[in-house]
Length: 107
Image (cartoon, rainbow, N blue to C red; front, side, top):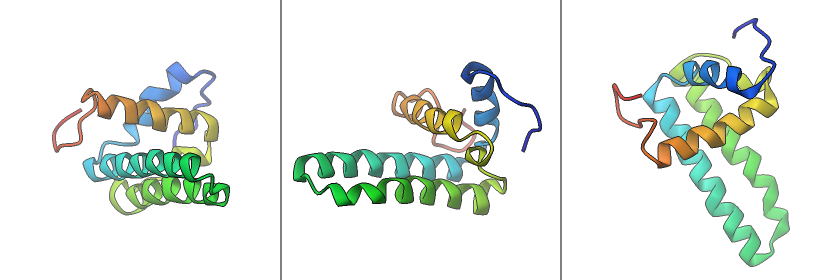
Protein backbone atom coordinates (compact mmCIF):
# COMPACT_ATOMS: atom_id res chain seq x y z
CA UNK A 1 0.00 0.00 0.00
CA UNK A 2 1.18 3.47 -0.75
CA UNK A 3 2.43 5.64 2.11
CA UNK A 4 1.20 8.78 0.31
CA UNK A 5 -1.75 10.45 1.97
CA UNK A 6 -4.37 11.47 -0.55
CA UNK A 7 -6.10 14.73 0.22
CA UNK A 8 -8.77 14.54 -2.47
CA UNK A 9 -10.60 11.94 -4.50
CA UNK A 10 -9.16 13.04 -7.86
CA UNK A 11 -5.63 12.27 -6.70
CA UNK A 12 -6.73 9.04 -5.00
CA UNK A 13 -8.57 7.49 -7.95
CA UNK A 14 -5.51 6.80 -10.16
CA UNK A 15 -3.92 5.06 -7.17
CA UNK A 16 -7.12 3.06 -6.66
CA UNK A 17 -7.09 1.93 -10.30
CA UNK A 18 -3.43 0.93 -9.96
CA UNK A 19 -4.54 -1.47 -7.22
CA UNK A 20 -6.99 -3.13 -9.64
CA UNK A 21 -4.80 -4.25 -12.52
CA UNK A 22 -5.77 -7.92 -12.35
CA UNK A 23 -8.79 -8.61 -14.56
CA UNK A 24 -10.20 -11.21 -12.16
CA UNK A 25 -10.06 -8.72 -9.31
CA UNK A 26 -11.94 -6.15 -11.43
CA UNK A 27 -14.49 -8.78 -12.44
CA UNK A 28 -15.09 -9.74 -8.81
CA UNK A 29 -15.63 -6.07 -7.91
CA UNK A 30 -18.06 -5.78 -10.82
CA UNK A 31 -20.00 -8.89 -9.79
CA UNK A 32 -20.14 -7.81 -6.14
CA UNK A 33 -21.32 -4.31 -7.01
CA UNK A 34 -23.93 -5.69 -9.38
CA UNK A 35 -25.28 -8.03 -6.71
CA UNK A 36 -25.42 -5.11 -4.27
CA UNK A 37 -27.60 -3.15 -6.71
CA UNK A 38 -29.92 -6.13 -7.15
CA UNK A 39 -30.08 -6.76 -3.40
CA UNK A 40 -30.82 -3.11 -2.71
CA UNK A 41 -33.71 -3.21 -5.16
CA UNK A 42 -35.00 -6.41 -3.52
CA UNK A 43 -34.75 -4.83 -0.07
CA UNK A 44 -36.55 -1.67 -1.18
CA UNK A 45 -39.34 -3.54 -2.96
CA UNK A 46 -39.85 -6.16 -0.26
CA UNK A 47 -39.19 -3.81 2.67
CA UNK A 48 -37.17 -6.60 4.26
CA UNK A 49 -34.84 -4.09 5.93
CA UNK A 50 -32.99 -6.76 7.88
CA UNK A 51 -31.37 -7.82 4.57
CA UNK A 52 -29.39 -4.57 4.47
CA UNK A 53 -26.67 -6.23 6.56
CA UNK A 54 -25.84 -8.38 3.52
CA UNK A 55 -24.76 -5.42 1.39
CA UNK A 56 -21.31 -4.83 2.92
CA UNK A 57 -20.72 -8.58 3.23
CA UNK A 58 -21.43 -9.06 -0.47
CA UNK A 59 -19.46 -6.02 -1.62
CA UNK A 60 -16.41 -6.49 0.54
CA UNK A 61 -16.53 -10.27 0.21
CA UNK A 62 -16.16 -10.24 -3.57
CA UNK A 63 -13.66 -7.37 -3.51
CA UNK A 64 -11.43 -8.87 -0.83
CA UNK A 65 -11.30 -12.26 -2.55
CA UNK A 66 -10.13 -10.38 -5.64
CA UNK A 67 -7.42 -8.55 -3.74
CA UNK A 68 -6.13 -11.34 -1.53
CA UNK A 69 -6.16 -14.16 -4.08
CA UNK A 70 -5.75 -12.51 -7.48
CA UNK A 71 -4.39 -8.98 -7.14
CA UNK A 72 -2.32 -10.05 -4.12
CA UNK A 73 -2.45 -6.66 -2.42
CA UNK A 74 -4.14 -5.05 0.54
CA UNK A 75 -7.52 -3.44 -0.27
CA UNK A 76 -7.36 0.37 -0.33
CA UNK A 77 -10.42 0.44 1.91
CA UNK A 78 -8.22 -0.41 4.89
CA UNK A 79 -6.42 2.92 4.62
CA UNK A 80 -8.93 5.04 2.68
CA UNK A 81 -12.42 3.72 3.50
CA UNK A 82 -14.49 6.63 2.15
CA UNK A 83 -12.45 7.30 -0.98
CA UNK A 84 -12.36 3.57 -1.65
CA UNK A 85 -16.14 3.19 -1.36
CA UNK A 86 -16.67 6.08 -3.76
CA UNK A 87 -14.00 4.70 -6.11
CA UNK A 88 -15.73 1.30 -6.15
CA UNK A 89 -18.84 2.91 -7.59
CA UNK A 90 -16.93 5.14 -10.01
CA UNK A 91 -15.07 2.07 -11.28
CA UNK A 92 -18.37 0.12 -11.52
CA UNK A 93 -19.92 2.95 -13.56
CA UNK A 94 -16.88 3.02 -15.85
CA UNK A 95 -17.13 -0.73 -16.35
CA UNK A 96 -20.85 -0.44 -17.15
CA UNK A 97 -20.01 2.21 -19.76
CA UNK A 98 -17.23 -0.04 -21.10
CA UNK A 99 -14.61 2.61 -20.24
CA UNK A 100 -12.73 0.24 -17.96
CA UNK A 101 -12.27 -3.26 -19.28
CA UNK A 102 -13.29 -6.56 -17.86
CA UNK A 103 -11.23 -8.48 -20.40
CA UNK A 104 -7.56 -9.33 -20.31
CA UNK A 105 -5.25 -6.61 -21.63
CA UNK A 106 -7.96 -3.98 -21.40
CA UNK A 107 -7.87 -0.84 -19.36
